[in-house]
Image (cartoon, rainbow, N blue to C red; front, side, top):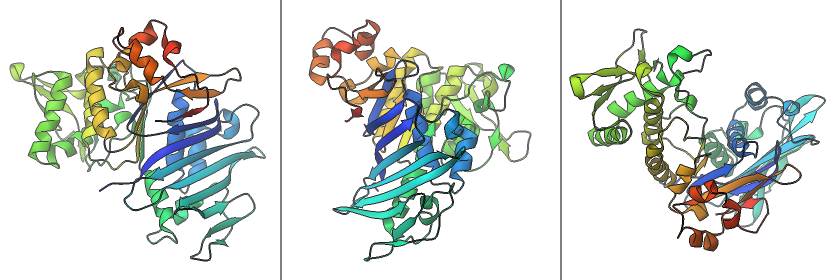
Length: 409
């Protein structure tokens, strides 16, 4: 069944992202210098996901900070995020926007808008600081009760079993299915100095894992589900992918019950000498690879997968296999990743359509550009890939002359 996907995001006045639009299809790889806005793109995806939560603003402040504490672009009072959603059979595209403003030192929702293109633009939800309107049948919009300044109307009307318009449910479902992943926390336990350090190595509560949680904090539970709930063929395929990263010496992955009731831990059994190595004794790269296997093998319902710097902790030889995993996922939903790895760029089959260069203009505003396909093809006759071209200092020579802030596939 084809599900709705996030086809496009637009971000305005979020740190360096003054006004950028990014179309999403297949695998998109964002590169750029530090501070150019790469991670902010990923963070914006997470804020869009949070818009389906009734405690949106309180969660936003706790996790990302208040608008006046670093979220806003300098000199601006508010930011806005928009997601274009589509892909469900027979259903028109829809577009949801939410705006936040700093009012009297408080972060509040300035407005919301939901449009369905059916086939002409039709407003389903409209909100500003003074009024709220929502779809009420063929008559169109009607006034609704006053809205809470920190609670998106989408989180209320979209979560209803029978919403007043199907676009509300579609937007709520698609945004809630955005899967945002920061780098996995795979540090050795002995260097841990905080609640999330090395959390991927720790036991996790034994429960059915429908997704890999951020930081891979439920990695043990995720593998327990992979090994017991998907059938023998899926299990064997998962083990083969594990061996691609950890070596043919892997005999099995195990999730024995931990000392704490209701918890499991993760171990790998190697054929040589029958050695069983617990998660806390595996290398950073081994734990990271297991997390990537779980991320891609769990049958997670996603509208978008966004991952910030997945190449961390991995040996360069594994980057090509990592791309294979992301390519598989990109057949089901858009995948957006950021990277500093030239080796990963060299492994892309279609860098002209996959790579997005993130850079700052003279006003310190982010602009997004793609390589020029024809020019890049000629350079690839002499270089291994776009990564080698960049490493040699020739990236600008293969870029499109278009300097707009819109990156399209």
